[in-house]
Image (cartoon, rainbow, N blue to C red):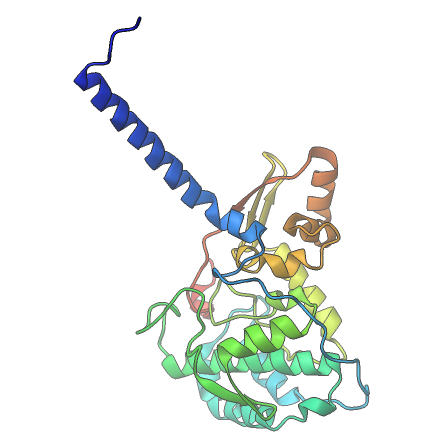
Length: 296
């Protein structure tokens, strides 16, 4: 029969077990975001079900976004970086456009016109909020700044006669009213880690092509999608983590990788030949998308 363990041996054993438990706990915490995303959750809440609430509508009924296109063309460069000095000089033009947005005939517009209107409203509110808080290095470097929040996330605005917050505009009016996860390639709360701003307004007539272009821009940019066939590593923006369920719901196999395979030929070819790459998450950049923050 083996001798009973001494007091020192028991103490070492308990310390070792505690250390193993601590390491295991830390390991679980490190992978929990990926587990959470796999379960289709975002920010700890139940993932919404995407629904198409609106019909195509009468194509002759359109909303004129040309004034917003003019503002963007002057202030945004080809890579989505913004001259906030230029925007500040045109603050009154932004306010005028938001005034027109407030009175837009939402019910008369077709599906794509509605979505274009909401995306433009979200961008205009984001950029106006940064201008009003300028100078600003990061949307987290302000009193009350919080991860994942736009500036003034709970401030109310009027969009097409509806009074709603910036947060509600993104999560309740855009995300859950359209089966269109590519909107995440257009939404930006005012940070470099968000989708790049366009130099033109979204329009109903060009919406599909514009969202396809935004998807291409993000998947071709290593700041958002850094795919390395050797050693089989896929580093992704945390937008794909936070809103994984939105992408999973349109994938034929119900997975985020399935969506990415349909969107990016390089990833699809790798998966077909070598299996699923290892996925890690890029650090999110909360700095404002000012031209001074362009990589040199």
